[in-house]
Length: 357
Image (cartoon, rainbow, N blue to C red):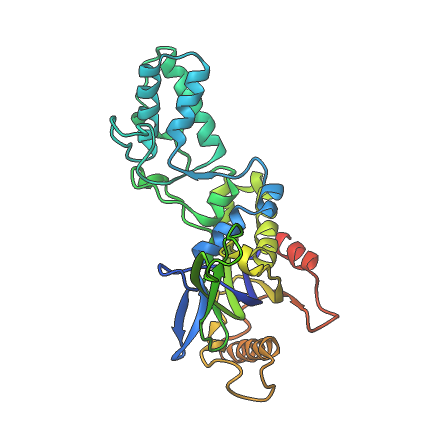
């Protein structure tokens, strides 16, 4: 099995604001001395992880990022008829293994201060320990880390994207997939949408003013996205060769989601539900490398082609990749390419099968 799987995607977004900054405008980055639109890796990973694609492909193998594991334990104990005071104490003890628990007088005394990524197996073990404690067994949850926390299991999203446990760092998991921030391949100017809302019940003859006035930023462009998967680490995080089927499903879901799932920001206003126009999937054992350098100089500002942003972006990526191969060697052993501009290229199903194989 080749150690590294790399994906390079070019996706055109029409006017949109799928990932906002603190002021509500599209996120940006200065690259090559000019402004580009940006979609953060966090926004992308969340959109993929919570997509129907992941749910369908990895049912039973998905963790949950939450502050509310203690509340689940509490509800479980309530259903078993455990007295409230005892149930809260047990829930707080167990939740404290995963993070710092809120104060006893807090509105939610069984929640943790931090979001914690919990696998299905860990959730089941937490409920089982709650039953043991409720039955009177003398157990100290904080001394049974190995029961409640796992260094490897079949939670595919935790294996892919990793987790950090400040309260138990030895049970952290390093992410098997690295995801870059997506940036436009060209210069972009963020524009403003001035909009109004009208009161439907305003009587004729009243003032013609709007009931609400607002502004929303937006932008459009071709985004380059790069991600790299360490398949050896993915298998280790999942628990070894016995979980090969889960690893294959995870890689297929990751590829399909990266090609078809957009972040949810302002989608009701812009319907920017994009599909990748170009995808290059690569496998190999050599040190991975991004091809973002192809766009250090923004496209559409050099060479022929006018403002064919997708075509110019594809050509720039291929030229840069070829030059890297000439100087450093090919770097990959297998590849699969999809392009909407080439009727003979691979399909999404081909890319997914390549990533799973």
